Each structure stands twice: as C-alpha cells, then as structure tokens.
Amino acid sequence: MTRAEEVIERAHSLVAALREKREREAERRKEVFGRIDIGKPLTMPSRGVQLSLELQ
Image (cartoon, rainbow, N blue to C red):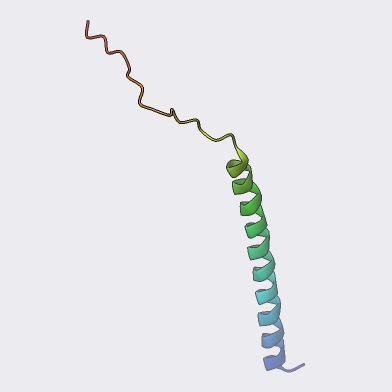
C-alpha cells in the first residue's frame, strides 16, 4: 500500500468515525429533548386573574 493510499484510508476511517459520533449525538438529543417535549403542558388561565396586594 502506498503512502497516498494509507492517507486516503485513514481519511475514510476518520470520516466514518465522525459520522457515527454525529449520529449518536443526534439520537441522544432526540431522546433527551423528546422527554422534555412529552412533559405536562402548563395550564393558562382562560381570563385575567387579579391578585390581592396587601400594602401593610
């Protein structure tokens, strides 16, 4: 195997490793943020609510 072929082979293996890492990270993000999205939605009052304000 010539030097050029070795360099090309290493470059291909590096690209493959980076692709696998990127895919693993994408799956992890999908899992983490998917759990956040599934959380219970916040309830919003249908109309304004007046709070009492005690000044003393």
